[in-house]
Length: 329
Ligand SMILES: Cc1cc2nc3c(=O)[nH]c(=O)nc-3n(C[C@H](O)[C@H](O)[C@H](O)COP(=O)(O)O)c2cc1C
Image (cartoon, protein in one colour):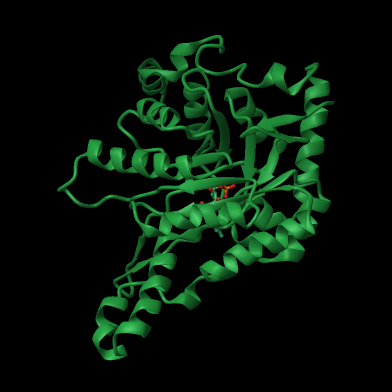
């Protein structure tokens, strides 16, 4: 079965790729993922806060005593909380590119316009084949309206896109009042792809210690939310689409591809089961297509999107009402 896939203008042997995670901090692991057939890999993110922190520390070391700058710097994450600093991140891209043949997608993660965006160019110069821009912003202020926040995100994208010779994709959060409209604005700003979605981690409350606690980032879930929006955007925007979140098997991959994804990114499942899962999912996908008499991946892709599925109302408010009314005691 021919599983060849075009993602962000790159020809990939198949559509199953490891998404952004700390796996790319370990070169041996990256090689093992390639041995299992990964045609591309997304780097873990280089964060705006990390870059700004480094820049401020350099500036503070040159201009101030440690006492005078200590308070301002204490708000920023400590450098050792990240697996590698900005320069090491660029070195890691170079090292990965020298060691494997698969496509390498850099990941830059932040929310404001500023000097840190120069790293987009440095990531491209280090050899990344594409850039995934993660603009997740859990806005808590009541002083900015959604238009302002979305315009800032579009501005970031436009700035990065105009400076880069490589394709740019944006990893989105699911919660926009009008996601299809925002996605269209991003496409108009020049993005080559969208990744649906970031997994959002909500803090929990430790009732014994009365502290806010972090949940584990590893875990599958919310696949239907991805499928729904892939199905909507497949028919509305002309760019590559990646699914991220909840994909642990070939059947999960079939669903997001049917909804309209070009590629299925896997993270938690690979972290739990190891790199061999990748070749297993690729093999199972091929087998499933043959058993179900598909001739190509293109025949399957988008076949259950909003306008192609037998019941488009499943994507609309009608589905919400029917679901509620379907309950019987
Ligand atoms: C340990 C861990 C680290 C992650 N690091 C990043 C990151 O650096 N940048 C990013 O955009 N997403 C990161 N993610 C999110 C994943 O790329 C992915 O979007 C999310 O885990 C949902 O996919 P999954 O259900 O396959 O895990 C991370 C996820 C995990 C579990």
